[in-house]
Every structure is written in C-alpha cells, then in structure tokens.
Length: 285
Image 1 (spheres, rainbow, N blue to C red):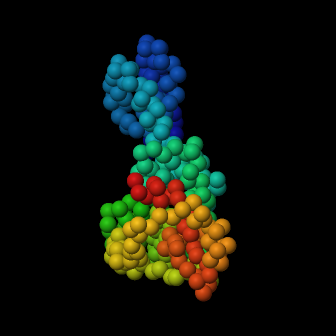
Image 2 (image 1 turned 60 degrees about the vertical axis):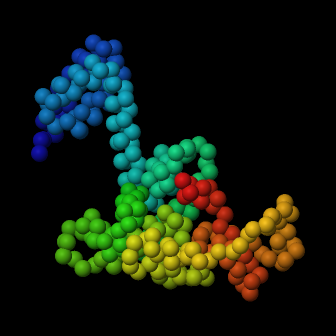
Image 3 (image 1 turned 90 degrees about the vertical axis):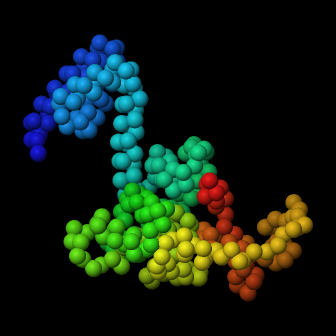
C-alpha cells in the first residue's frame, strides 16, 4: 500500500500533467476533477499520461469528468443510511431508476413524494423493531436484494448471497437473521406488507414468504383466478368516495398495502383504497 506521502507526490505529479494539457487545450476548469478521478481509477502512472493526452486530444474531457463525478455521487448517495432524512433528490432518482427503470422520471415532478414518505417510514419501523438484526443499513443494500428478486433467485439463495456479503465467517449458520432485510426490500419494492414485526399489530392479514422466488409468492397473493366481469359497466362522475359514504354508508380507509386494495373490513362497512397511483404507474413501466 502506498504511504500518504507517496500518494500526495503521485497526485501532484498527475496534476502537473493535467495542467499542461489543460492549458494547451484551453480547459483549465477540469484540472481538479480529472486529477482526483485519475488518481483513484488509474493505478499506473505511465497509463495516466496516455489517458490524459487522449482525453484532451479527442475533446471528450467534459463527458469524462461529468461521468466520473456522477458515478462518485451515485455511489455516495446509495451508500447513505436508510435512516437519513430527507432523502436527497439525487438519491431518490437513483432508487427509482433501480426499482422501476422508468423512462420519464424526474425528481422535480414530485409524483413519488408519497412513496418516499412510505419508504422512509418502513425503514424507520424495521430498524426500530429489528435493531442490529437488520443487516441492510443503506439504500445500496436494499437495491442489491431487489436485484436478486429480478434475477428470480429463491429466498434461500438470497440468504446465501447476504451471508457472503455481511459475514466474514462463511460457516456461520445464521441465515435466518437476514429475513428482516429481505422482507423490508419486498415492502419497499412492491408496497406489500410482508413478514413479521415483533411486538407489532397492524390488523392486516399476515403474508409470509417462506421459499421459492418472489415472483411465485406474488402470484399466489394475486391469483389470476380472482376476476370480476365488467362488460357494459360504466361508472358515472357521481361515483366518488364521498357518495359511497353518503349513499351506501361505506367508510373509505386509505392503505399503503397493495394487498388490501378494495378489501372490505369492519363488517363490510369499511373499504380500503390503495392510494399510491404514481407508484402503480411506474410499476407498469
């Protein structure tokens, strides 16, 4: 490992090379960003000379520096704690693009603000309930698990991946400790209340994913066989939540659990409505 003195000397040498090319090509503003990036990413000094020369000659220095700065900021954003609040807009965008891969998302439109309120609350609850047993500490940890969902890994395989990621003792047989992190990732990705929270009561039907890939579990929760015919039915403008209460005596209760959408409760006098419409639109994409 190079000493701090050696690293400072190397950075000074790289900066000198960058300055020469920057002055020659009239791009002095990129000296600092390029110096830091090359010192981190290119270990061989001789290679650096070639890289610097090529970047300036090909006039792609701006794209290179901007890309590197974005990569660094992305890594730093996703490595922040799940409990950090509020979640910065840049971090929100990275989370959304990892979860839904949308083509038109911009943090400015704020359509997913209610979702991120849910996201933050779920992380807070899971941390409070599970404490140190919650191995997922950062947004990156959650997105790693979600990535394994997309690859259709079964629950046991995901536990094995988490064992490799978090435990230095690979013979340790404590895979069940990772269940709280897996369940949290499901809740954040699908807005489905899943898993058990110790000393907590929600009044909702318990959903426990035990084995197999997540896709199979979700298919069991939302079976294709449950379908109501709607041919010829057209709801008028008077079909509103207020009129449902006034005419039918139904109370509307908003829910963040997708499984509870349109579920009748309390002797069929209360209907649950899943109200995160923007989340559903992004799931469609």
